[in-house]
Length: 128
Image 1 (cartoon, helix red, strand yellow):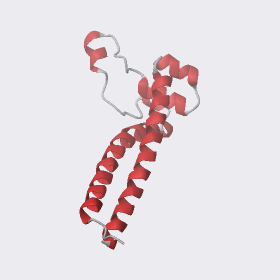
Image 2 (cartoon, rainbow, N blue to C red; image 1 turned 180 degrees about the horizontal axis):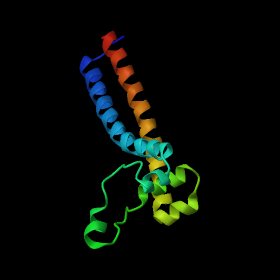
Image 3 (cartoon, helix red, strand yellow; image 1 turned 120 degrees about the vertical axis):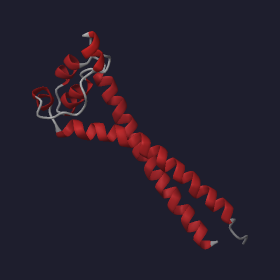
Image 4 (cartoon, rainbow, N blue to C red; image 1 turned 135 degrees about the vertical axis):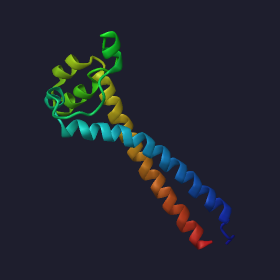
């Protein structure tokens, strides 16, 4: 049986490491946003008890909200089952919310796959 090439195992580990970073880059913001949306309610943000972001600069300067205005409160409303209220905050929120769920699922899957590939590459290099 031929000996395993250590260079192939090293490249496989490096590839898995790159995929781990990419998966974390996708998973962190999406899953983090969804997690926070379950922790708080839109009322907590409106009352000022919870401050998650700076005020909208476009609204402060021009008096008109930007395309993402209300998205945080809309995510919170959706996470708490209030779809009508979410549309009130931002019409695009349900679509973006579903997109975030899809990206979080994809990032989770890729993270697990990269971790498994990293583990397999490490096992191969230990045999070499």
